[in-house]
Length: 268
Image 1 (cartoon, one colour):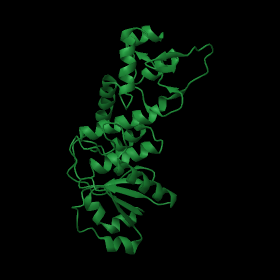
Image 2 (cartoon, rainbow, N blue to C red):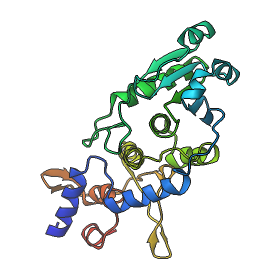
Image 3 (cartoon, rainbow, N blue to C red):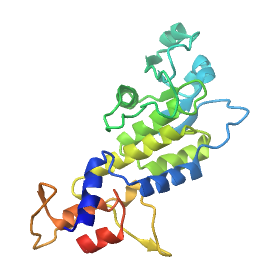
Image 4 (cartoon, helix red, strand yellow):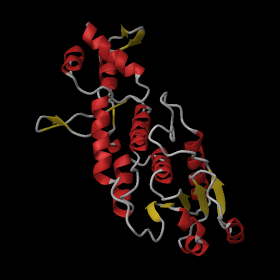
């Protein structure tokens, strides 16, 4: 590989999320085209964004009658522990499980889903466990925070991604039922990074490329395609790792994007 291609390879390996800044920007534009809309004046009840999963606010969490009417059996408090006056005795009487993950802040730098090294947060582990438990029991979960807009919505979207739901499908559901979620730009970024991490874990996969009017089409989770065997691949050592040019090229497509240097180096 020439020096330009090696720089591209090193950049991909040093990025724990496997997504380039240009691709990250495109994905964030896609997110913002669907959600992060103006908060409505009225928010009368929780929003069902997927089978068995609602997003709500602190007022919804206090309305036990409404929770029972909607069939909600598990409530996850995603706000700071400062939310008080929740009817926990009534929860117990109605058989509603209560769980909490103390998300202390909602500023853009808070590592709600993962830190900058890509290490998953305890908040996300709790959210996934709560949702899984509700599904196993045949119930429904509601994630809530103060406004049902950022902390709870981000954890709900992330929990669905961990259940193999493609991000575009989840966002379209949010757009239809609760379009004001994910206003926090830092949380938007973490959602996109989580999607990239999950896609990178797909075995021997690649992002297909399609050109529409000279532009690379925006990829979504459902676009993942399993590789087909290719004969006559010769291993090479790239940055100290034995691999094939084809494999490195497929890694880069979807992580640092299709550049002239990458195309020339890998023959794509």
